[in-house]
Length: 87
Image 1 (cartoon, one colour):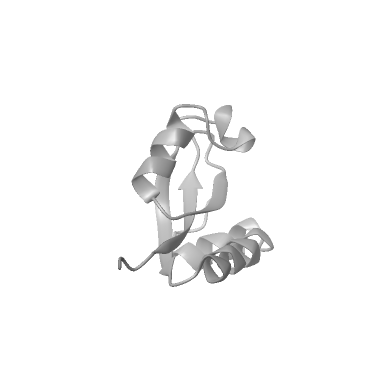
Image 2: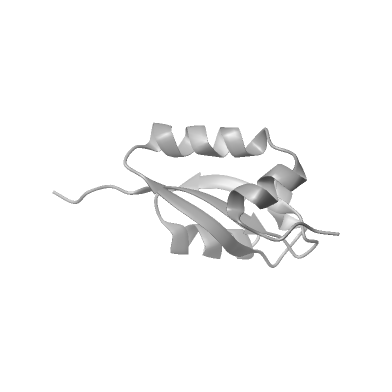
């Protein structure tokens, strides 16, 4: 039996904004986003690229991490992902 991996991920969009999401297949999800078939938010901000990801054992844990990330302001998000703050 394969162990299922669940990912919380952060994308950086062409306009510099961040998009956070959940997937169980990072490669496929990035391709879908960049084909314009992903989230409505990213469709007008292509291309997007992964800048951060965390792996969890359950979908619930990964989605909780996504939710918590979305409650942060830009500065807190940059600190969370270990990126230098924007000026």
